[in-house]
Image (cartoon, rainbow, N blue to C red; front, top):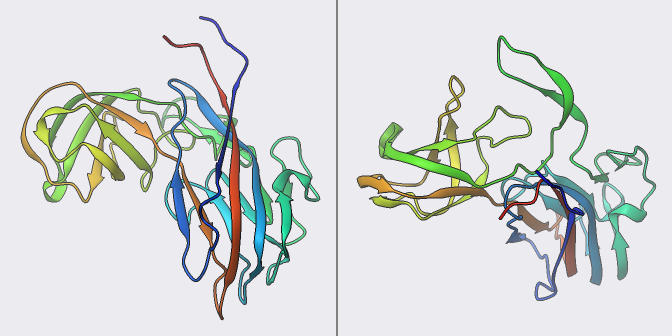
Length: 252
């Protein structure tokens, strides 16, 4: 098995000029077989950011509004937004290496997957070696799809591991290539995970149909929201970007 120089992925979304009273969200897919760490979040503010209760912010998480993987609150205090100009999470008053954080106010910056935490199987060994906010590697290969709870798709996969550090309830995933069974394919949300044998996941909002015949894989999809501040009349926006480092073995 060989390892290459970690892949550095930088993505920018210049078309979203306004965060406004609601957030805009984007999706990212990492390379096959590699885990990801959010190394930086960037904003070129073109309209000054205003928040009454909280400032606007950039997040990277398992769903809209979640910051499992990374967070950058765009202000100098919890209620004071940044003015126009370029702002980088990694240029703030950072402590830790890794994870890097800026704690001059609550959760100002959280990078590198957050603090190390324990991961293991009940009855087995545990170790404080897994970043809680590590983007898990994919894809997981589908071996079967059956009717799950409340008629949602229950998808059997190989390679599912216990959280943290693996797939988790609430995570957005892409299911693709499932043949025979209907309802599973698409960008969906995990509603349940088999925590006994780690053999299957269930997908909220899906409706099972047909009979599984072959194929399929499941890939985690990190969500990047650009959220407006809460309370009052939040406003502002600009160009946003994220830098993710993907680490793992070379794959064909």
